[in-house]
Image (cartoon, rainbow, N blue to C red; front, side):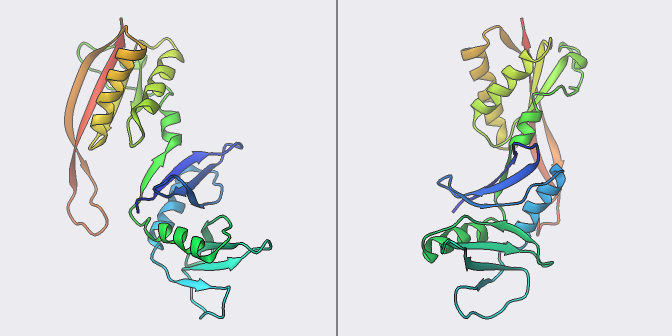
Amino acid sequence: MSPKFQVYKDASGKFRFRLRADDERIVAVGEAYEQHASCLNGIKSIQKNCNSEIEDLTIEDRKLANPKYQIFTDSGGKFRFHLKASNGEIIAESEGYPTKEECLRDLDYVKDSCNAEIEDATTIRASAESVEAPKAKGAVRSEDSKVVFIGNKMPMNYVMAVMTGLAASDSKAITLKARGQAITTAVDTAEITRNRFLKNLKVSKIAIGTEEMPPREGETKARMVSTIEIVLTKD
């Protein structure tokens, strides 16, 4: 199983997250948050409590202390589950299922989300906004440049961000920034944009380096991650 969290904004502008299974089905959702950081904290709470035990309210099951999963039936007779944090707050809940087996199947995806990747659509949307880029010899001035941060999405998502960023103002340059495994996506984004959409775009600068990242949970040493910056300018 390889579930992933997705962060997005709803119609009212609030931050939400959902957990998708490896076949793209939505298996659990969170509440609406006013702040982006609060939404990310909600995901972290799920990852922290992902290995909690299951309390089945559809049978005479033992009562468990929080944190815990609870399986129950709704007013329509469908099976559902939610995950409660240690304070009793519901931090993730499912849709309704016709059978308990299907409910347990998707609950297992939540149990497997302890280290699931987080795909943040709100970061991509913000990447089309003006962000100061570092000054570089031979590049366009930083105040005339924009930045697209490359993550785990497909290259075409970032191609659209590049095109939107360049069309939104009179900027003559845009910088792609990536690190680790996303470096390949950054290169693909640059080539697809130049060869298929904006043929007057050229690569004016490529800078590679390393960045120190904090240790993962359970590790004690910082990690060194490769980075790349690709500056694209219009003729």
